[in-house]
Image (cartoon, rainbow, N blue to C red; front, side, top):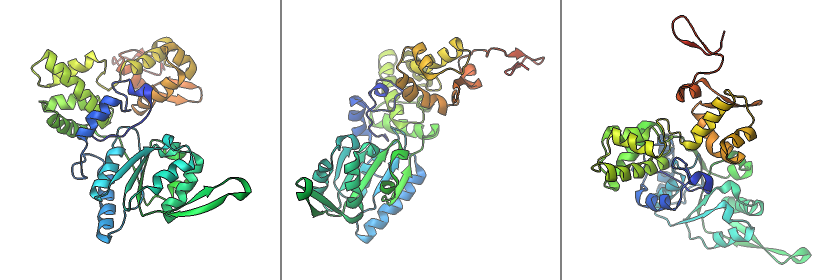
Length: 356
């Protein structure tokens, strides 16, 4: 129930991709929590944000600008809507790629109401001229509109009503320091623990009127990559399986059988992830191997392997990026049930991975 939107179409096609497709967006609109008390997970962020919003309401002032960073699907868009709801203010939603000129931003800013929340997704992808205009708008609530060209151009100052900018980014390191420093509150969204995802799944199941046993929710949570959006997507697919193949009740066995049909294993790896690992282990002996060579081996584009598959494999400790190339870890061999080359069995029956 805690999500945000991204534009990576290659990731959106995957069941375990964190990007939101149209179906996700439609369902998420119905499942999103409406206030901080209802929001699950991100305990520190919720506590800190609650203090910021309560203090602003007590002063009768507009809330400070907020920057939310973190991977897709963790709840940045949801928190922006909660900020607007907590401040009893309207919200306007746009994205960095949609603002290519300073005039685009000026048109949006000049039409804001006092206290309105402006949610700017993927803020790091905004054009540089618009970015520079945003500095003054955030700090002084003013923009200079340039009229004319060349030596005859004049800057007309335009006063703006106080507003709250909520910026969201999946790549906080790409934000220039002058922009980052103008946010009064910054928060980094962490991946969810399985127990938190179980709570997400139970809440979503209740809203979707799906019967789910605790063990069934745990099975789905364990394969959700620490991401609520993925947990909800897997829940919907398991619900479909349970309705067609069973009596509609999601048990542990039903969840496991359903996700096996969709090729999502017990650690959340899908066909692409396992394809990368299998190529690395079976064709290249665990590496090191170059990214381009690995991509050719799995029949995917280099960018797909690097940006879609690798981040989760690295986070799970199944693959390492080294100066010499990609290398599989002992955990990768164990997960696929393969024996590393050069390993031998010691006297007590245990494998010596180092071949000493």
